[in-house]
Length: 110
Image 1 (cartoon, helix red, strand yellow):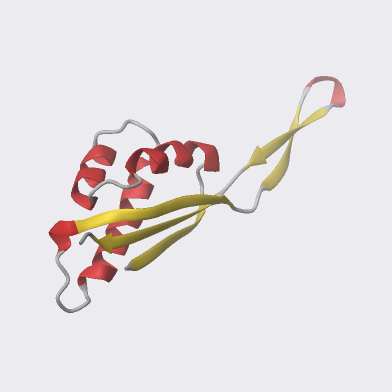
Image 2 (tube, rainbow, N blue to C red):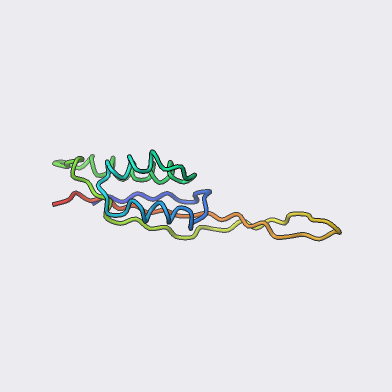
């Protein structure tokens, strides 16, 4: 079992959660193929974290990469950067930039 984390990702957590829900429980090769053809902005980021977890698991002795499965994958909220956007008549509206923390656990299927 290997775990990889992507922290302070510049994508909103709810947008990454859609991708993570799609690949959770899939074999790693199928998950990476699915993310490669998904036109969402965070798909490359999620694929990169899955590949990192896969390489961490592959370094172990007697590891079979072909039988790896995405066991767990979840997204937590990261810090929010708040800015102000100037508007008409001297007003300002808040501009909120969200970030996310992504955790992926890969395990060899029995």
